Length: 108
Image 1 (cartoon, rainbow, N blue to C red):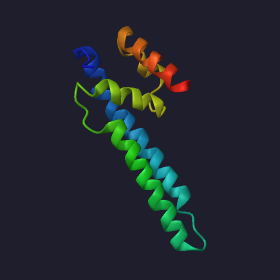
Image 2: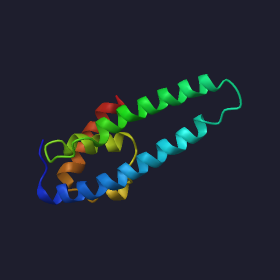
Image 3: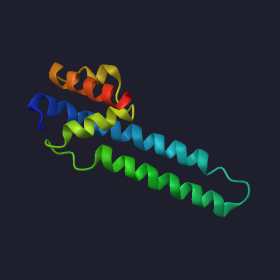
Image 4: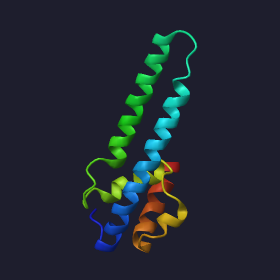
């Protein structure tokens, strides 16, 4: 689903905001996971798994931010809780309604 120009402009701005938030979250997760006092190989393996998992999430949430992919990426950003309710309200009512439907489907 391609989005209209006004929503595209909001998306482009919030894409950067959400990417920064996600990156911060990952760095904080890595910092906590890297607290090792022994068994450094096990610690390394945990960090490797964590980064691989976060990379997958990052890809489906941020890669290829084109107008044709914007709605899907936006829905994934919201699923990852990277946007505030106030930021979501910046989108058109049509987009907000579609996002609500997706969120309801994901919860059930």
